[in-house]
Image 1 (cartoon, rainbow, N blue to C red):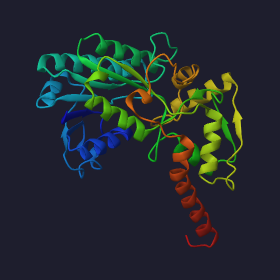
Image 2: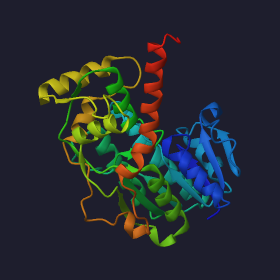
Image 3: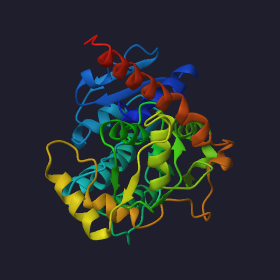
Image 4: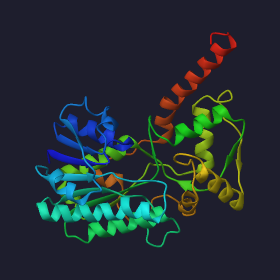
Length: 318
């Protein structure tokens, strides 16, 4: 398939998908509310940016025209039931109806590892409802369920590294939560593979890296890879459940997107690791990269910048 529409394509994963599709000489359309959000994509060959409100159901059908497939990357991590419902359920429903009306059949939908109607997390419940909406349509739908995604522009390991550059100790909620981080390049490769392989339609894939870590281990590794505290990282102090929930509640009150929400804690109450009951990246011919082979390359650069800044301050250069 050579004409692809990306919803949510201006984000972390979308950038990598656009780059891979462009290298394959695919024509890609990225729909975004504000074209300024896609400046980093506009220089890519064969990538067109269109301003549109994808949550307006009347705007979806015109966007689909002339395309052979659509990739839905839209997701939010924080919010209330209504916000999660809008992004993760109502949009897939509107997309399915628009596809049925236009005759476009191929959808690759990015969900979440741990999506379940019985989850304690609003996020994970809404992700499960979105999957169900699409899979019940009879369209050619592939669902990918990634674990937490890491890479050079991530807001995951980079955030933990920056926090350790600022504070002597890291008080950590859900320290023993287990995750199976996956490299953004592998996620993008999985999406592109599914677009090119019709046999993946009707399948759900668990998209995970090769190794399982606790959140505490990941925070410690982020500090070490960034060269914090002489490469040792900062001490990590696990917070009791009640204190963790209080911390998350206070973070929700701060302006902007919180670093942690109570719903995040609810999601991490269940291990975010592959169940082994569904096919994974290997079934797509992808051998996932290990975190310890990738993360030092970009977190180490962050540590180098931090070290140079400290030296300049010591020398009175600014």
